[in-house]
Length: 154
Ligand code: FES
Image (tube, rainbow, N blue to C red; front, side):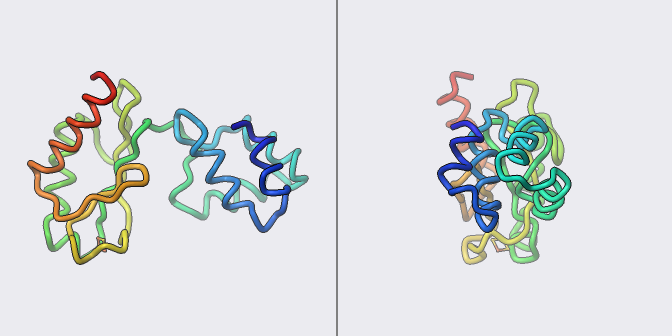
């Protein structure tokens, strides 16, 4: 969906800016909010560029840098940390040869850390795009990554 259509869907209302930004990001194959899209958004909604970037940069879920098709967010809050989130992070990092905030060269995965995903009872947890995985072990997360790679023909 193009920026103009997204703005229209939300009737161009300022109170819907966060949802609009979300949809713009989700509709970008590189999972980010480009400068070009912010410019169109600013014109369409008649909101200054600085207001939009100011709002978006307040939230860690928005990115102004191109990212992978799959965003892997490892929960780094205390309950997950205690249950071994660091090991999960290291396994992913080793498997994909990327560190925090980096994207694989094939543009498939970006690795990030996040705060509590709200599923502490199944710590350690990871969210990949909109799906949350809990009770993870190094083996389980490796399998999940393998499944995604297979699905993507990698
Ligand atoms: S601390 Fe990780 S899901 Fe709550």
